[in-house]
Image (cartoon, rainbow, N blue to C red; front, side, top):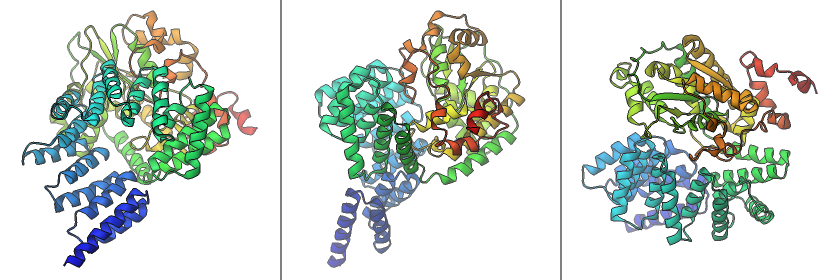
Length: 562
């Protein structure tokens, strides 16, 4: 008996060493094999779950963490592992239900309350998340991870300056706490405080030379000195030479290398690094493409829901801005948000959350859970005097039938941009995993661009007059005329402030955080022409009929012949 126990301990030690060395495949295979030999040992499925997490296979991680927890249900570490895996896998509601089950046995620990706050934040229950994290900090005031999460929650509540103040205090008290430095730099980047961002990233790279996140963030800054660029070049080259075992870190290093190559105007090298990054990211998403095809067909075949009654006069008007990612939705939101009576809210996930639930439930569920009530219940607090607010979640184009019927007074803008420029911009952005899976493959990007056009043509047909197309190229070419048109459509008086969206104090938490802080310009129009060879799969994948107005533009035929 003792011999078997010793063998089990030795096996767990050996597998853990493989995991720590970054040999994830070997660790996973040995852990799953050993779990069959020792089926009651919770440590083995836990190690398998940790491997799956590092490989970003969150569904698999959930399965193994749940198995480990059921073998040892009182183990606090396993409770945390399983709860976090649910959140990382995009199931915060399931995490909250799991923690509710745990709380029935007794009060949640600070670590479990932390997970609860994280899940509530992802469920867009920022007020409740703030209460939960405050409880953690009351019991553990020096908990630096809880302080970082509180900053995330303050960001969600649009208390950006408070978040930065809190993170500054955290870093001042813990100057060698790397996650705090990086999180502060991200908040400052969102607010356009580029000199402060650079200062903190320099400090981060002194603490941890070659740190992937610091390299990626710093390489994208426009205010680097010659010495900064030289430091980046040395550290990126060293990281690429030695290899980065963690896939997520390796992706960030490749994006950093691509940004540096772009700075040096070496487009072929930039495209090489971007291709390497996206090749690593696309693993595991093959089935998502077929799922997107099926979802599109199902949504376009569904009848429009019944329209909700018009809201009372004087109620705050929603303005939805949709389009492909990187099509200019942030710019339109910031133009509108500069109006004194309009509040820009960034990208809200509420429509997507509701739609995912509605599509998984029987039809009668919608009668008791209408989109309007769900959406307004999660809406951030609006400022006094706001007559309208802007939600610029680009992917809402898949749900415009539901949106238009739920909000009869809503204004809906569709930002239309040359898909080739959109594709290049998406290719240069590190969106990570999740809903923008299609950005990791040129064929998938073309397929999604075609789906987007199918959605929009359908909505224009069944919702005549409800959707207003805004051409990005026209917008950046004639800002004043387009801004006046936006104001008129929204029943607003035009204000000169709308001509300076780069002056907006609102934080930007998307890939547009640097571009949107520059005065409006047309510098990126036609940028795809520098990468025609690399982007041939994307261009060939575009439906010529759906994109005729762009593909048949003057000059394209001559360019393709050349």
